Length: 143
Image (tube, rainbow, N blue to C red):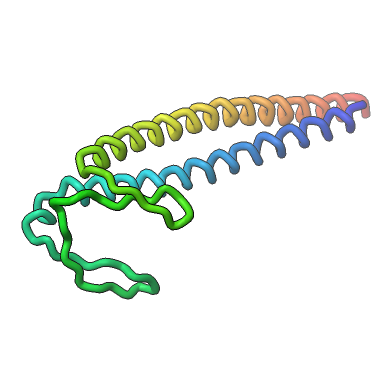
């Protein structure tokens, strides 16, 4: 019975550890996405960009091209499968701000879940270690 209990505790600890690692991965992915949203938002609000109108554009493999920006027109926004729509820069900024808030809320929620799972993990681990120590003491006293 004691071995079965240890196996169950070990399985639960492993499960909780995998949940924590999964949440960490999700948070890291969301943070990278949030940084991309912030960069796009900054590009749309950067006054230096509006003045210079010239920039470098990455074309891949660390290679850049000089480009001239047309900031007075609509933006091209991908909607999937290499299909783009035109969007007003103000609408794009608003959408990016809303998306950033949503991602920040998701990150906060995941961090709360992680904290709760981590507390549960620590509680179970402490109880298992305490039980293990008590069992050793009982065996010593029986000898």
